[in-house]
Amino acid sequence: MNSRKVGSKKELLRNVLILYGVRGCTYLLPLVTFPYLARVLRPEGLGAVIFSQTIGGIIAIGVEYGFDFSATRETARLSSDKKSLRDLISGVLAAKLLLALVGIMGAVFFRPYILRVAPSDALFWASTLWGVAQGINMLWYFQGQQRMNWAGGLDIGGKIVATLSIFVFVHQPADGWKVMAAQAAGCSVSHAITIGIAYREVGLRWPSARLTWQALRLGWSMFLFRAAQYLTTANAVILGVFATSTAVGLFAGAEKFRQVAAQGLWPINQALFPHQSQLVTENRTKALRMVRKSLALLGVLSSIFGLSLIFGAPVIVRLVLGAAFMPAVPVLRVLGVLVPLQALCDVISFQWMLPLRLDRQFNLVILTSGIGAVAMGVLLAPLMGALGVAIAVTIAQMYALIAILIVLRRRGLSPFQFHRQRRRRWKLMTLKPSWNTIKRALAFTA
Image (cartoon, rainbow, N blue to C red; front, top):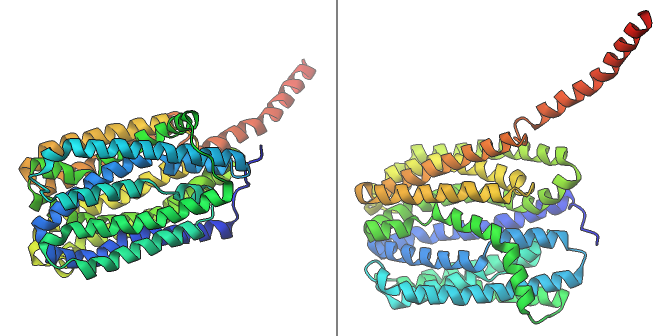
């Protein structure tokens, strides 16, 4: 079975640009609507929407099951084998449908416990359906083949329609559920079309228990990563349970700008992940060179973004969110520190550590980081509200970056030492003939 060759620079650049379009719509379009929603819904109403959206996000993480990484990597490996791709798609989609059913049942079970923060049934169901629709997608298939044209375009189109719908239908605090309903409808249509395109390319096969189980086993390690990663971002749930919906709204206001700054750099890692997954097996030195370039570029850009949030927080909050959100200024400043930490961690993880298949070690770091963020958030949220959670998340991200570097260093795979070790081995090899020559000369003279 022949695997597809590493894509050309032109293909890689195109995929990066398309993923920037997808990510831009995911985070920039909500930023366009955010000032409008902040003024229409006010902090308390916006907090209820963000809290419900976080619950939907938990469902999405469960349904997605880490397939955006594990199935992407498998698609890149099997890209020339149509039959294997058909089996993979069948198993992954069946697994996602099964996980969606579990997610809906879990949401219904926990519904009575979140009535205090989000009492609207319409908002609850809209967020639940959005989570399911967000999790059932086919971007992993097109990304694994390094051709994102159709999938990226449809995803962007669905998000644009959802954004326009918010301005058309949301006019008062009671309309909060329409925000999630618009997003659910947009991604449902776009994802349904991409599923149809994928089946048209590889053919339809009805799922079996064997294929479903294989898919669940394939995605397990990356699901642990995604679940652990979400622990560090499920801040709205912590604030909703241990603080107030107003605290959720204040944190969400600051977090939105942090997401735009951080996620603006993410498409580079996402596009390079399948590329690096192949390259580390073919030319590890070249793969490492790409990691170092990314560290330099994204390190500088993320530092600029972070400093902009730290020093420009008062102006940004007042202009975009309004005077009611001024208590979010210190929260935004703390989250500005988080931007470069996350950027460096993402580059090392997704361009080096995961392509090297150090999944277990990576999952352990992210899991412990997530548990630490939740524990600190639970302690600090009742005392400091949104600011306490922001501090907890930043400390957890700092720990994750340091822990990942320690793991790689102990294995002799640190991206900052790899070339030095190679040069040391090369010098020893070049010295060896000279030492042999000296020994022969000594033996001759004796």
